[in-house]
Length: 236
Image 1 (tube, rainbow, N blue to C red):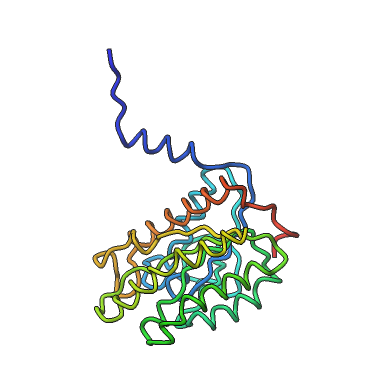
Image 2 (cartoon, one colour):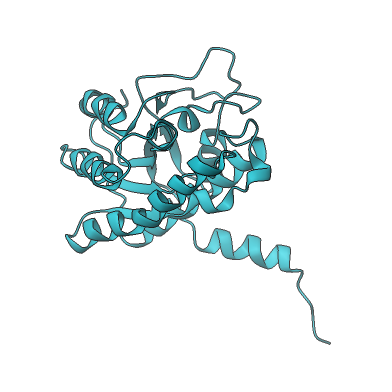
């Protein structure tokens, strides 16, 4: 008799089969208000979903950053390098301060929404993003960068800017990969629809959950490529 296995079980098995275990993941969530978790009901954004997915696989996970989530956020690890309202350049400044102290072996990067909403150097935004990534990779810790696209925006004009910016991000990632650098492209903006926005800008809880899963998949792919280095030094 032929046994039919439900697709949900197959998907769960494949997800775990592609994962890794027994590693230390010191993750810097880097960006602006979406990284910080604005508009998520528990003020954790995607970070708790990402943390728990890696932890369930049997890894030691530690989020790091100099701008922790509010005290009333519900998750046990509040550390983040998310800076609400900041454009790419200001996030890069904060990253350069944070890296020597926090020494992540993974950075999840989702940044640029404020540049798009503020109409800030749109043509140069991908180049500025690339410089942020290069500067991050140039610090002594061997760091895997998981580089994400932006979620959509309810304002049609801003959303067109986001589409153009997002279209450039795979090239930003691939240019670094071609040079032997550890950059994984993660199309996390694609998993969030306009109906998944809490306020027209920031994802709701479901949207954040999908972003967390997207970043998880990116980290799993990076580890498969051999891009997950041991952490450098003790936890900050």
